[in-house]
Length: 150
Image (tube, rainbow, N blue to C red; front, side, top):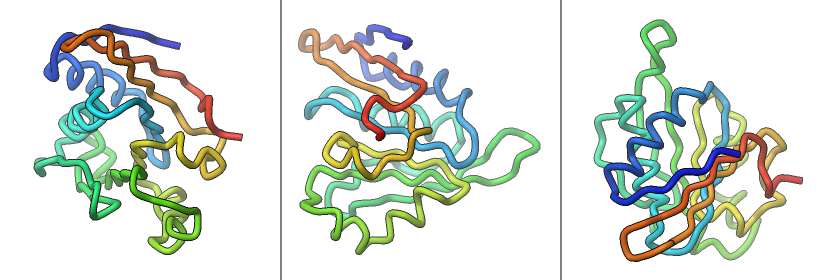
């Protein structure tokens, strides 16, 4: 597990950018932490790395936002699927939006509030946990294998 302290949104995006270099097609990233701890900022950093160019916002009401980006010089285009599971009440609701198609696509799936549905996550899911240390500081811990996936 890698842990680091972020003292600003810019540092959170920078750490996400470094983490993004380890990602490959089909990866799933589970983001867990309380409101306001940096999950969406981290996603912005991932999208910056993949040159998505879109304004990244939490998909609280849309459930999923899709961002088109570039996967390195030789790997072409890639989609990043950004889910917010906070308002989802059941697995049926997730299946209603076709989440399994996103999870098994060759894009990268980013799931905020993934701890609400741990049974959904494949074993190869990577977990990024966010903890508020103070008003401006966050501890961010990256696990290579999901602590949530069964």
